[in-house]
Image 1 (cartoon, helix red, strand yellow):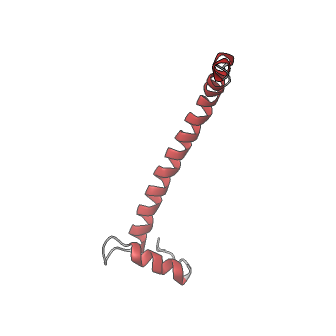
Image 2 (image 1 turned 180 degrees about the horizontal axis):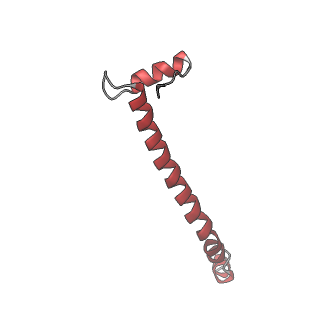
Image 3 (image 1 turned 90 degrees about the vertical axis):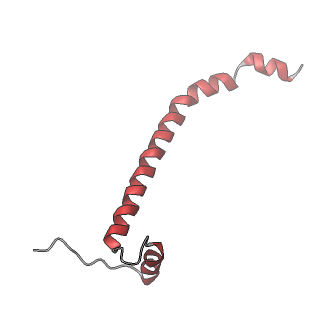
Length: 75
C-alpha cells in the first residue's frame, strides 16, 4: 500500500501553490510541509503572546487604576 494520497483542492488554491513554490521542481508535498512548519511556529508564538498578555493583565490594571495617578490628572 502506498503512503501517497490524492487530495482535491480548488483550482485557485492550486494556482496559489504554484506561485508560492521556492523553485520550479519543488513538489506540492514539500511546499505544504514547509507551510505547515511555519504555521505551527506562528501558532506556538501566538499562544506564548496570549499567555504573557494574560499574566500581565492584573499588574497593568493595578498600575492603570492607581488613585495617586488620578490625582495628578486634576493638578
